[in-house]
Length: 88
Image 1 (cartoon, one colour):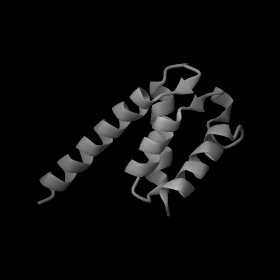
Image 2: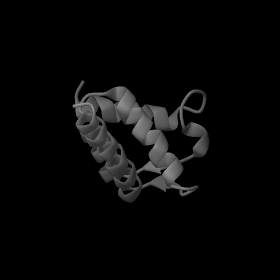
Image 3: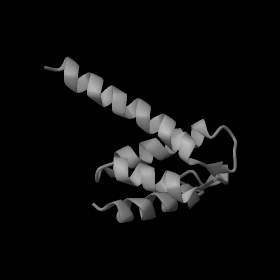
Image 4: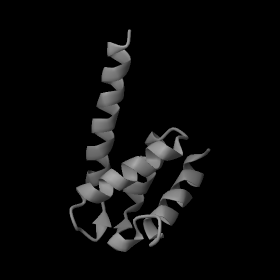
């Protein structure tokens, strides 16, 4: 799945009031959306998980910004590196 397809799914999840994050009333900056979609590397579940954590990290702000997405992305990437290193 491409980054553009993931971005569409992320926006849909952000606006879905029944099953997504729509009840929060947040928007997402284009930079944050691009970062999450690109770093997901085609993994929609990873992208949705990152979006959800970035939403929480935004701490009741109206917009999920690049800073929120970077914070989550960096921590998730570090965990992956740690896991792959420790599984050797």
